[in-house]
Length: 140
Image (tube, rainbow, N blue to C red):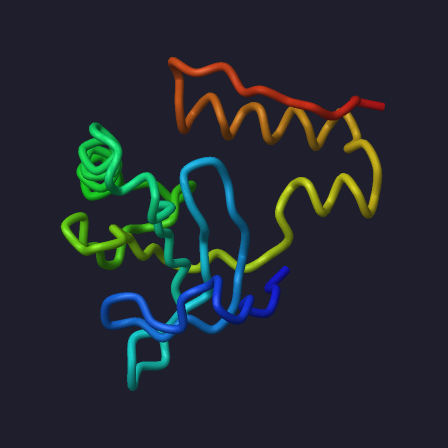
């Protein structure tokens, strides 16, 4: 769900992108709906929190995330479109994947059926064979 930008808090422009709405936020930063100035394609634009960009190691961590994203090619992962790890507030842009997030689906519809959870787990294992998915939902 796209939320309106918060006046004086969210940026209206990041690099060559016009920020159109807020998609979400987390401990490291925020994700916005954006498009390149004069362009048509919408992207998910991730920024790290401004106060973190000065903390030793955060820029390097973000640069590593960009480097990994540049190398990954998978139908299960949004493709990296653009980035600037050296900007005052570092950012990256990925393909926009339309649809609800899992938290919204669980809030609206309740626990997922067991078959759906098994499908998600299978996709996760193919995508990241060394990782174990963390779930906070109850299978019915």
